[in-house]
Amino acid sequence: MASKENPMREVMIEKVVVNIGVGQAGERLNKAMKVIEMLTKHKPVLTTGKKTVREFNLRKGLTIGTKVTLRGEDASKFLKEAFYANDNKIHSYSIDRQGNAYFGINDYTEFKGMKYDPDIGIFGMDIAIVMKRRGGYRVSRRRLSNQHLKPAQRVTKPETLSFLKNNFNVDEVS
Image 1 (tube, rainbow, N blue to C red):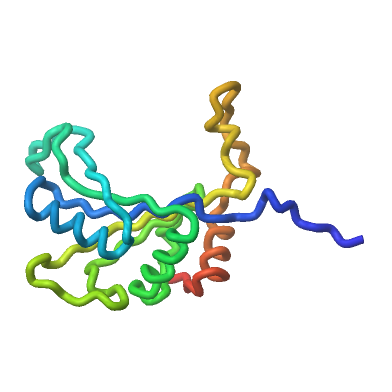
Image 2 (cartoon, rainbow, N blue to C red):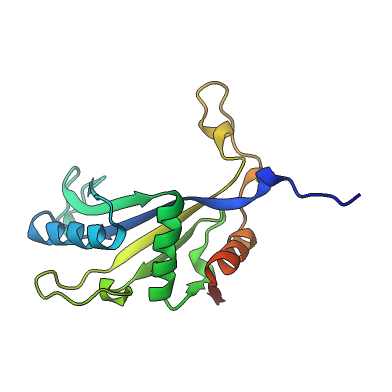
């Protein structure tokens, strides 16, 4: 009798967050929103500053960026395009201890089918991939009797790397 792996331990993508930090409100922020909407086909939301930093002329509550959260099939489709723009590579230091991956793209024109528009300019973006097990993290998020995740429930760095290699043909760069 062959042992079967528990299906609740399967690693999967919970969400992908695409973020463009502009640092100021105004016309440049509107252009950044337009770029995100062109790439993801979803309406972005505005992000605000969490604290005041005088050196960067930022105030708490000031609108400084835009982001969109993708889940399910939209997240997978966007990641295929994003890894293509990133030459199907990810650095080993881009994956944290919880198994989440982060990388950046310098210019939106690196995506397939995107051309430089002088009215928009050049915008780079940060992409965060949040991983989870199929069993989910309900134990840490439920309302009654929530608890910390046990180490066996967490997604590890090697599991994330193998998931990205198998599903997106991504190579690890040391």
